[in-house]
Image 1: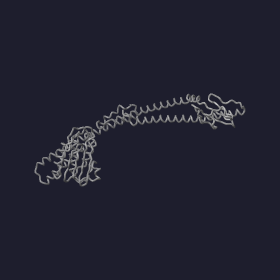
Image 2: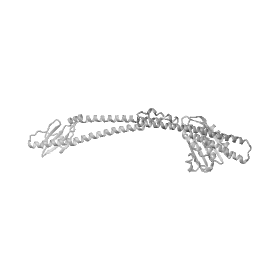
Image 3: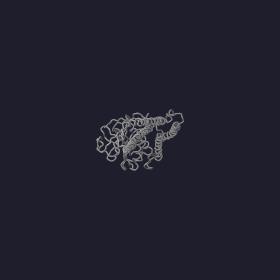
Image 4: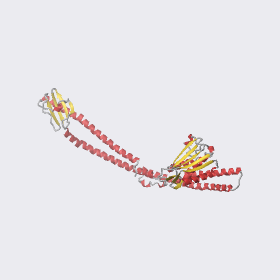
Length: 435
C-alpha cells in the first residue's frame, strides 16, 4: 500500500516526540550535573572547610578530614606535603588536572595556612549511576515505549482513512464507474467517523452513478431524435439537387445544405463532449496521409469557395494509433477553420515526420485573440459565419487527452499556421520520411 501524507505526518510527529523527550532528558541531566557540582558539592565542601577551621581554632591538633569521599591536604605556609598541581590554585572550588583524573578541589585559607579538600567523585558517580542515571534511563525507555504505543494506536485509528485515501487515489475513474469504488470493506462496523465517511462515499458513488446513467440515456435519446430530422433534411436536399432550380432557390438550397452540415457537426461535437470516454481509447493504426486526402476532398466538396485551393504535401508517411473518428474531428476542424477565414488564396496541409501542419493565406488572427481561440464558443467576429466556436475547443481537448501538442502562429494579413504534433504515447506513432 502506498504511504500517504497522513501516515508520513504521523511518523514525523512520533520522531519529533522522541527527539523532544531526548533533548529534554539531556538538558535535564546537564542541568542536574551543573547544580550538583556548582551548588551542592561546593556548599558541602565549604561547610566542611568552615567546620575544620572552627575545630582547629579550639584544637590545633584537630585531624584533617579523610573519609570515603573526601581527601585533604594542609599547608602550614611552607608548601610541604602538598601536590605540585595545587601550587597555583586560588581560594574556591575548581577542577584540577592530576594525570588521568580531574578531581574537584576546594581551597580555603586561614591566615598563612591553606586547606585543600579533594572530592572523590568516583564513589559518588557510581551511586549517581545506580540511583540516578539508571532509573532515568528506565524512565526514558518507558517514555519511548509509551510514545511508540501512542504512535501505533494513532496509526491504527487513521489506518482506515489511509486505506480509503489509497483506494480512491488508485481508482481509475476514467475506466470504471464511480459506483464500483470498492470502499465497503474499509468500514469497521463500529459507527466511527471513518464508517460515516465510507457511507458518505458510497452514497456519493450511488448518486454519481444515477447521474451518469441519466446522462447516458439523454445522450442516447438526443442522438437518435436529433439525427433523424437531419437525415430527413439531407435526403430532401439530395432530392432537390436533382431538380433544375433558378438562381435564388439554388442559393437557398445551398444555405440549407451548409446549415444542415453545420448542425450535424455541432451535434457530433456536443455528443462527444457529453461522452468523455469516447474521447479516449487506443483505436487502430490510422494512416494520416490517406485520412487527410479524404478530409480535403470532403471539405472542397462543400466549401463553396472555388477561389481557395487546398493542397496536401506528403513529406512523410505518418501513422498514428487513435480512433479514426477522433483524428477526423481534430484535423477536419482545423482545415474547415482555415477555410472559413480564407477568402482567397491557398491552404496547405503538410504531413511531416511527426506532425501535421495546416497553413493558410487568410486574414490572420489578432495577437489579443490568439490566447482565446481554444475557448468554447469564442469567435473572433460574430459576422464571420465561422460556426459556433466549439471546433477548436474540442480539438484542444482531444489533443490534451491524447498527449498531442497543438500550437498556432498567426500574422494579421498574412495568414495562420496550425500544427499538431503526435508523440508522448510510447509506440502509438510511426512515420517514414519521404524526403
